[in-house]
Amino acid sequence: MSSDTARTGPANPELRGSVELTLAMILSGTLGIFVVESGASPFNVVFFRCVFGAVALGLYCLVRGFFKNHGFTAKKVGLAALGGVFIVFNWAFLFESYEATSISVATVVYHTQPFYVVLLGAILFRDKLTANKFAWLGVAFVGLILVAGVSLSDFSDGGNSTYLIGLGYALLAAVFYAFATVITKRVTGVKPHLVALIQVTLGIPLLLPFASFTEMNGMGADWGWLVGLGLIHTCLMYVLMYSAYQKLPTAKIAVLAFIYPAVAMLADWAVYGHRISLLQALGIPLIVGASLGVNLGWKLLPGRTPEAVPAPAAPAETPATTAEQSARAEEVLIGESR
Image: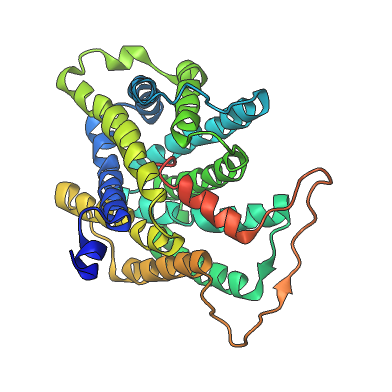
């Protein structure tokens, strides 16, 4: 076999990882359709996603033998559970945003999440915020303003419009995701499938007070959408992503991650006829470019060595981490926020 064939053949781990992550991101892009078509309230959707997802992930981990030599300690379980609190409420607020805005707008606004990870990394772990990172944050903020598509009419009733509230939900979901990332990245030496299992299992009692079971009467075939969220968008999607992360470099993960919002926007247009305006479309490449710039270390400002901006002081007992570790943790959790 020639060297070219060896590099491009099906046995190539990077090629296989690219296919796995592409499939996972395509599945992520259809998540909003399953949420809306189920007809259930956002908190009910998340509750049953946790139920079906926990069963599927639990069986997968059992079959793969992940429960043996799991690597958990009491501290790691606690951190995984705390991250789970933010994960499940992140889902709830994102799904609320779908109803108040659209799948397209909510998904793109939600993809400002990496920047909150950067900011929290600076606050909690003393990661350096370089001038270039601040510049990329500025680019992303401009993109966010354009994508939001807020008009004066949205403020005509005192800023209480459903659309504005929906945008707030998407931003809050992104912030919750960032907290989940910086917390869960401290859980090392444990299979990510087991961390995800703890988090979705925790979501069941956590969301039980918010679930309305009377609402589920007469759902009929719509239960299939909820089962799909657990089996497809939780278990299968996580398995594909975690397998891909082991085979791919950071740069390729960062690029392939944007298949998710692209598919979500296409699905929103194809199924519901939702289109974004030209002005909103101009903001999308700004957010995409800024996210890639932060993750891949692109230089936006001139100069070989941009001056670092001192990060806010961290708590005395919080160990420092590197920007590379923060970026890697963001990659590993990118699917857990879906």
